Image (cartoon, rainbow, N blue to C red; front, side):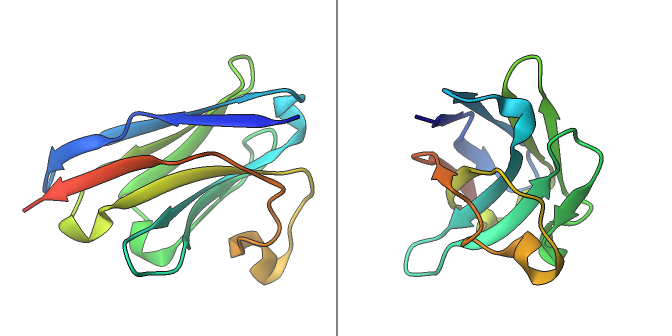
Length: 127
């Protein structure tokens, strides 16, 4: 059984930075494509970023491009999300997710392709 555990969330002032981590256990991490999503109160879960299983390709939501960076360390079974220039509207619970398959087109930004999800970590950005 795959388990995903996020960490690194917290309270930060606008303009600050955070790095989220997500550790996978239970399966071979290097065979999974990994994604980050977020969900703010009263809103749908939205795509943040995705990285292929070997880290060769990344995808970002338009509003995160240039501010957020997804990366992975397969030796540590960990995917990261570096978030810079944080804004109050980035406040949300951030989730990591694992997808065993390659994506194409809009699937690369969808929640439905992911088989496993973590419990989430809260990020709060104060103004």
